[in-house]
Image (cartoon, rainbow, N blue to C red):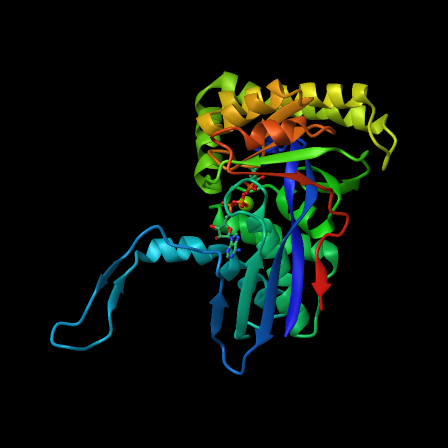
Length: 337
Ligand SMILES: Nc1ncnc2c1ncn2[C@@H]1O[C@H](COP(=O)(O)OP(=O)(O)O)[C@@H](O)[C@H]1O
Ligand SMILES: C[C@@](O)(CCOP(=O)(O)O)CC(=O)O
Ligand SMILES: [Mg+2]
């Protein structure tokens, strides 16, 4: 059996616009998905994923005292739940030219699902890594990131950037613009994450932005404006000392851009009332800046605050179910014992 893990991420800025070729800066965080893969003698794949749950189903029991209960679960729901793991197995098979390789796969994760922290990317990256290593042919980091991107691209109906998967594969802070992906150095950014307990559907939210952008010139400009603020953010980061604690001035400048980014994402229709409430709670508590992270719709916000004020305020915010500090994860994908 082979066990690999990969980190989740927050976006300092640039989500959604990155899908259309603008730059983005996601940062890997110390919350990981762990996937084990064990080769089977046959061509079947058995997935155990205790974090996946179904919203509802109907059970029908056999009439005259027997028969197996007939559980009516819409096929689409199961496919949606298992899509990323399935795509990861397919990529591993394809990479090693072993179309009939069978696996027992187990997924465990401390990244909430669908909350904008990149659980899908972490599962796909760790899944491809575990499956290819299990067959004795580990992929190098670049191919792994590329294969993971292809898996997300497929599951999200052709609408995905390389940002999440590259970040989860490499760890650290990264800059992604189209096919150009690289690691960058940053100071120690004091991320605070607030989670509303909910989730958003990445595929649908990305499709919504795509439609707006195609229909309205000002929505297309909004996407370009996000790109502009990311470029400004890069300049600010380039002047900072990597690995050091950032100055208050630097945090204020980055925070302003995060606030601006949230406003533009809001305009593109991907925020929600609970995300907005958490963003405002963080700002009122003195955070340098706050924004939603990832696809939006529900899930997580990320704020910058080196003090405990934002954490405390979010803890007392009705819409916020969980708060934690998110340390930058220096390790990307890695093998676990
Ligand atoms: N622990 C897990 N076990 C199985 N599948 C998971 C797990 N975590 C995430 N996934 C897959 O990723 C999907 C969520 O991905 P997505 O909607 O992109 O949100 P995000 O990447 O922001 O968490 C889930 O519906 C599921 O298919
Ligand atoms: C909205 C987007 O920019 C990020 C999605 O992040 P997440 O899956 O919500 O963690 C989509 C993408 O880059 O593929
Ligand atoms: Mg995702």
